[in-house]
Each structure stands twice: as C-alpha cells, then as structure tokens.
Image (cartoon, rainbow, N blue to C red; front, side):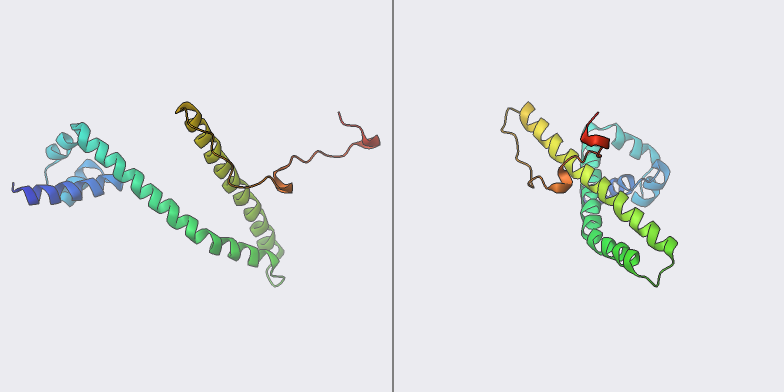
Length: 150
C-alpha cells in the first residue's frame, strides 16, 4: 500500500476509533481489514496517538459546551423569571440553575485543587486561586436558639 494511502487509512481509522466505532465499523470506514485494525491497536505508538486524539476531542467538546453555557443559563433564568410560564416549569428551571451552578463550581474548585496538588508534587509553587473568597464561598451556619452553636 502506498505511504499516502496508509496515512489516510490510519487517519480515518484513528478518527473512527476515537469516535467510538467498533473494530468492524472502523475497518470499514478506513477501508482496511479488521486484522489491520487489531495490528494497529497492538502498536503502543498508535494507541498513544489514539488517546491523544480522544483527549483533544474531549477538550474541544468541553470548550464548545462551556461557550454555549452562558446562553443556556440565560434560557433557564428567563424561564425561571417568566411569570407567563407554568409554575412547574419555573420551579424546574430554578432547580436546574441551582444544581448546575453547584456542579460547575465544584468542578472548577476541584480543578484548582488538583492543579495545586500536581504543582506541589512537581516541586513547583502552589497556584493561587483564580478568585477571592466571597460571601458565597463562606460556610453558612444555621442559627440556634439562644445564639448557641452545638
């Protein structure tokens, strides 16, 4: 097989596998035999490139979803505040805003903490937080009768 055809087949194979195709479907899309797919998958270099492609695709997808996130939040907030909407729709959109906000915040904080641990393990300086603590960052303790805390 000429080198340019093999390279094109490898690229098609890599994309198909990265997108979750079975060996049979990936072979068909790359126009190679199934044994060729198994040989490529047995090659550590090919597997490394495949993992890099999957990682890149995942990062691009996450970036696109993040970019669309602000518009999605606006839709939820608009639904939540639109008095013409049925109360059930408004309640569900309010719940979604709260749940998604919490998940997003937890993920961002976890990412920062992980970066700090990785920096510490690598012997580097600890990265600073990307934001200053706000009222929302502080723990709120419920008030108790007589002003006593348990």
